[in-house]
Every structure is written in structure tokens, then in C-alpha cells.
Amino acid sequence: MNLGNSPILWSETWSLALQALRANKLRAMLTMLGVIIGSACIVLVVTVALAGKHYVIAQIEGVGANLIYAEHFASGPVSIADEINLDDLEAVKAGIPQVRHAAGTRNLPMTMVVNGEEHPVSMVGVTEGFQQIRNLVIERGSYFDPDDMNARRKVCLLTESLAASVFPSDDPVGKDIRVGELHFTVIGVFRERVATFGQTEITRESLLVPFSLMRYFAGDEYIKTFYVQADRPEDVPSVTRQTSEILASRHRPGTEYRVDNLTGILETARHISAALTVVLILIALIALTISGIGIMNIMLVTVTERTQEIGIRKAVGAQHNAILHQFLMEALIISGAGSLAGIGIAVAIPVFVNFLLAFFPVPSDVAIPVSWTSVVLAFVVSCSTGLLFGYLPANRAAKLHPTESLRYE
Image (cartoon, rainbow, N blue to C red; front, side):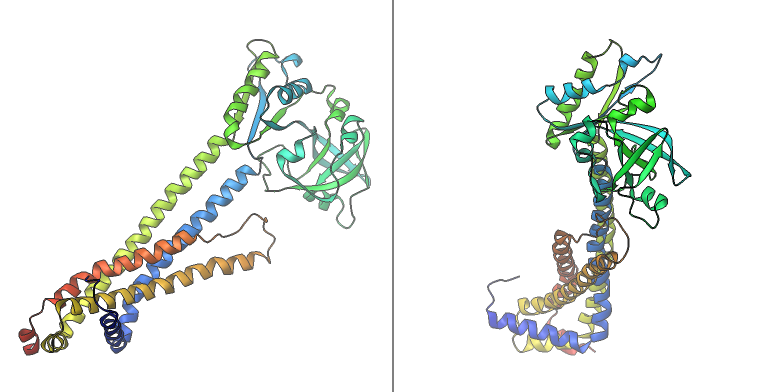
């Protein structure tokens, strides 16, 4: 384009383009429909990909952020001396500066008796730091305090599901329950920040007790699963390695421990999400390309139908660039208006879905994000597609000879 044209000529070009489109409203709307679909697809595809990515990553991170976990891997005869113990936990906390929290757990299948009724449960003994590491949310009551842990107080917390099942119409806090031969007082009801039932030791029918009470039920106090939380994501590899070294140094040579973290899983989830986003965007771009071909075909027909009009304009002094700009402006208006309409529809859908989610019992982390980068991308790509495919018919119109155009029937 000749960007040196005066604002008056640009205003005239805009006015002529609008007049031409108004004269064929139905054709312009049908041509615009492809752009609306293509631009909406770009925004919705990125929105769906982001929602999926956030949900999957939230599920993984729900187990704990910057988390390293360790377990004793027994491939032969098991000795109690090989199991992870509380001294190992203290050694890791004292020996690794990058550790924010460390906690140990052990779970046993038990039977809980309430008002004479038996309920199968998973009793989970936990040490201090477990709540912070596992992002537990206390819905009612309170969590264990240091005195509960150190004095072996017979107190417990129930999952929301277990509390609703055992105490359907009562507040469980303060109630007495029996597990095995011990009586416990319920001090709280909890839930995981992100539901991970089936992925960790927490199940729907779990109750938490201070780890120091596990000796009454198991006869010992070894740790089944050992959690370590690093200060920062970049500290995770170093803390993983140091944890493995400390465990190996404190136990018999040859004892195997599985020390791992969630970094690999998170990276894999991000890579899969990115790959799916690229594939879906390519599909949306194909839709836009098809709409661009539609713009080109319709405008080629329009040029043929308006040959005499072009001849008259050239006869009264319209320059090559004026004709070129007019038809390019028509293509830009079609693609730009279609893009704005498509983006408006695409943005309205997740906003409406988020509004509906507020009325349904879904996890608080579930939300449909809108990527404003995809909005800009959809608009730029749609307008560029219109100009690209509109150039051929516009150039053809600009090159028509005035005499031949006036004689065209």
C-alpha cells in the first residue's frame, strides 16, 4: 500500500468500501461467517487447552508443591532397621538447608466404632509438617498442635466424606469414636485443597492421628512414606539427591530407597499440553485459511460484477492504488468485523461457564481461563488472512483497463 495517501483519501476509501458491502449485505455476512468461526476457534482452542493444563497441573501439585517423597524399597528380606524412621526425618531437616518442611506418614486399615456401628477406615499417622506439605484445608475444628503430637493425645481428624457418612446430622467435632482398643476425640474435619483421592495415602474414609500413636497399633514407629518440601522449584533436584544420600548413609549398605519428585510428571504434563495446543491451533488456522479462500472467491466474483463501476472510477481519475485500497479495505472490514464477532463469542462462552460453575459443587481450583494473548493472535491472524487472500482480487480490480471495463456487459 501507499501509506503516503492523505487522510481524506483514506476516509473516502473507507466510505466506498462500506457502501459496497452494504449493497451486498447477505454476501458480506456469509463471507464473514467463516472468519467468525475461525477466530472463535483460535480463542476457544487456547482456552480449552489452558483449562486442561491448569486442571492437570493442579491435580499433580495438589499432592504437594516442590515435593520429594521417599519409601523403603524392599526386594528381599525386610529388617526393621532398614525402614525409614523419625531420626531420618530429623536428619534430613537438619542436614539440608533448602528443606522447608518434612513429614512422615504410615497408614493402616482399621475399623472405627461410632454409636455401636462399625465403619472400615484407613487410619493415617502423620508427623508435624504434614498439613503444610499436603495443603490440607481444615473445614471445621482445628489441626493437631505440637502438644497433640508430643503428648500422644488421642485426638483425630476425619475427611469430609467420612464425617458426613458417620455423623450425617451432627457436628463431629468433640465426638468420641473408638479405633481398635483406643478412644479418640474428633478435633477437626479436613479436605485436600485439590482432590487426590486414590493417588496418595488419603482416601475418602481416612482419619488422621498423631504419628506417635502408631506404636499402639503397629508395635513400632517406622515411616512408610517420607515427604520433603523444598523451598523453591529449582531446589527440588538438589534436595532429592541429598535426601537419597542421607537415607543411604544412615542405613545398611545395599538397602534400597525410592526417592523421587513430581518434577518429571509436571514437565510431561506441560509438554503434552503445549503439543495439544499447537495441534489445535493449527486446526483453527486451517479453518481461517478456508475462510480466507472464501473471501478471495467472493471478491473475485465481486470484481467481475463491478467491472463497469471500476471502469467509471478510473475514467474520472481514480488511480491504481485507490482501487487497490478500496478492495483491500473491503476484505479488511469483512475479516476484522468477523474476527471481533468471533472473539466476542469465544470470550463470552468461558465467562458464562465460570458463572455457572459458581452454582455447582466443583473444586474451587476449577476455572476456565481466557488467554488474552489468543485474543490478540486471533484478531491479527484473521485480519492478515483477509488482507492476504483479498490482495489477488483487489490487484486484479486495480489492473482493469478503463476502456475495457466501460464496454463490459
